[in-house]
Image (cartoon, rainbow over all chains, first blue to last red; front, side):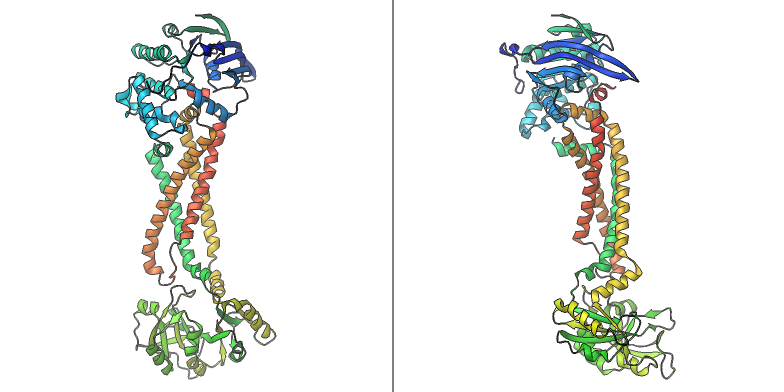
Length: 240
Length: 386
């Protein structure tokens, strides 16, 4: 597995990869303020596979978006390897995401005019990297998700499960510090869902990838190393 | 894949929309190319002309006469190498509406003062030897199938003959050529001034204009001022200007082509922006999720702006290129007819570069439009949406 490095060690555990302190998120619904997150405190260590569960509206996707730098908290702080992200500008956040994160979305979010390989290659276009190196990384990422034989297919020529595997390959290709998965099996049949969970599990187990995954599915939630429950914008408890 | 490939894939994702947009832009720039060619035809040689040829007219109006005796003073300038003079004949063939541009000139001297016209020595001798000899421009000769030795009669809408005969007889003495870069169209026929002056009843010994050829083009301003100052208080004050300035003044009486070009460019600018803004707006609406995705995986706003700029530039430059190609094809066909009157009719490099500059400018302006959208785009909402 050429581009994927085994990332966490015992030493890494001294400082949390991600620190969430007192994070709140308030939206305005008309003139009424609605508190989606009500003071979340949580540390995530490198190499953890954290699954977030909770009913609809509990704030899990909002928390995930804040962790991924797609949204900003109303208050509280978010630190990454000890660095506070609160004051990052848009371009600094974009660069941070490019260097450290891989996203897997429920709706795959593939670009329809690009082939599977080209979709996977997208994050690498931001890096100063030779064409050969990009192709090598793309091939490896597609191999990890078992889609080497589909690299020239366009999204419309792939099944939902295959599209999600391309999406995982895209998230992996930059060898990010952690993966953010927002209900990755939500749109898939059970067989495809199991394949996706198996891939994520392997990434965590074999390559030490830090993964944060939101899910509604209890079976999916159990593959993580730590289960966090959210209820009404607050943490309810954790299961190791 | 690389970023240019990504830009091309995005631009071509809806091929019909791309083709229609490029076609519209192409039509606009084709129109611009035609106007630029017309402008070049009318003004091109004027802009590039030397300032060694002066024309002296009556200050009151170009149609008012000047006494021929002014020749004596004009000849006194050592900087003046050659002097010719000319008068309008106002010729027509059979009926006044069939006008023929005949000018009465003082023979060899006029041709020397106007080096744009060239005539072979045999034809010159032939012309000087015939009182009613007439020189025909090559373009007119070709157009009207006129041959050397041919005889014809013309009426004059300005002059009456002293013998009350209605027509003036001519014999074609030669065919002259006009240089390609001349500011004059080179369509006139030249008769002898003496023939006109002897036969006409009124305004004898007067001319319409003097033509001066200078030794040094840099002297034109000083000499013009000196001539006009000398005749300022005489019966016919003069207005002296370069031949190019005179041609431009005559042209502007018909149409202010530079103003027309400005309006056309303005219309093209606004139309292109309108069409492309609508196109970009549709594109953004269709691709909001993809924009959110590219932003999420690390594309900064600056880079997204660059991608939009390149996509717009691809659209506009394709349209501009196609428009100029079409324009060039049309101009090539039109030149067969218009080139006779406007030898400089055609596209110039600077004209094409102006068009490309306009396209690049529009691309830049249009790339700013999605910026507002980018800054207000809720990534989390777009990426969550089904």
